[in-house]
Amino acid sequence: MIVILMGAPGAGKGTQAEYLRQSKGFIKVSTGDLLRREVSLKTDLGKRVEAIMSQGSLVSDDILMEMMKAALAKYAELNCVLDGFPRTVAQADWLAGLVKVAGVIHVDVDREELIRRIEGRLICSSCEAVYHVTRKPPMNDMVCDKCGSLLKTRPDDTREKVLHRLDVYTSQTKPVLDYYKSRNQYFCVDGNAGEVAVSQQLDMLLSRIEH
Ligand code: AMP
Image (tube, rainbow, N blue to C red; front, side):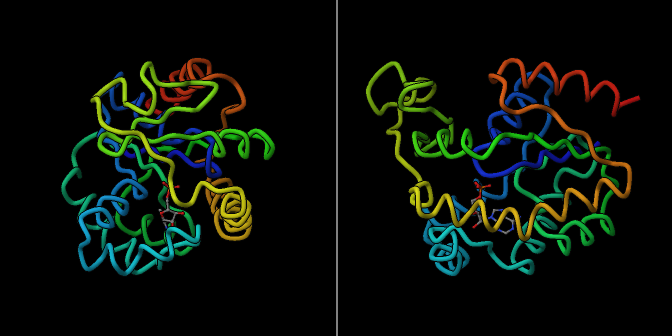
């Protein structure tokens, strides 16, 4: 079963995808994590996408489709949660031709809340665990509670880039929500609630999607 988590930057898609991985055994496919790995390994692909990602713009559909084709072929028979894909209608259309999507869950968060979350965000340089300087600080300054690696801020998490990413989301990704609404595959949770409350809403939706 393939489930898609959608939402603006900072909506908590990654955190909830991780919840589904740990609590329900889903395979998590995060295109942002996959691309950041290419950048940190300085692969040819990483070099091609680094500047685009640090500006907060979208990487080309061709690159994403190539990357997702390989990832989805690997996990075809398993429960899979997609975090960060599709982000354009072209990507959604391409995906529909490749696999059956069981449901699309929109984690809906107010704009001001998104900005507050992203501006204080800290990410583990190794396991991608997410923290926040005031709301979810690590136990030890700038060190990941889970794996002990250094925490860092993402280069695309500055205020200027966040505003650009929100514009990109509105112009290119919001139409994808309409795409799934028109196909009756769209579900929504209130992402303004705390992490645990959002996970509970997800659990309820998943039992509807599964049956
Ligand atoms: P994320 O971690 O999901 O916020 O993604 C970080 C960055 O990776 C985005 O700002 C884009 O530059 C790139 N990216 C991730 N997923 C996609 C996608 N489906 N299409 C285009 N670019 C993407």
